[in-house]
Length: 112
Image (cartoon, rainbow, N blue to C red; front, side, top):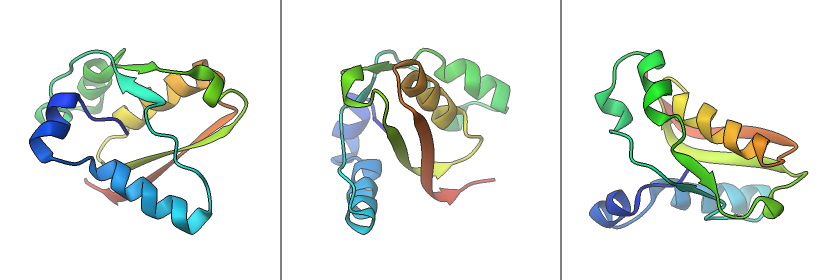
């Protein structure tokens, strides 16, 4: 799951990217970073309330960098934490519209 450039600079790393590398090693599947990017700025999902608010907040934030890389393929989105699923839902929507055959999600933790 892509971070904004600012957020990655603040942290010094992308936790989802590190997690994807570990999942990749177990599944013997390649990691394709930078397939999705954040094209807009949304306030942090943690600062929003309901799932409806989170869906509105994240809408239109992701864009494809190279749809040919995922066209007809099954994609595994990797993220560290899922609360409502709004971010994963929006990312999956963008990937499917770009031609992904199927999109699955792997998250390390579920927050309730």
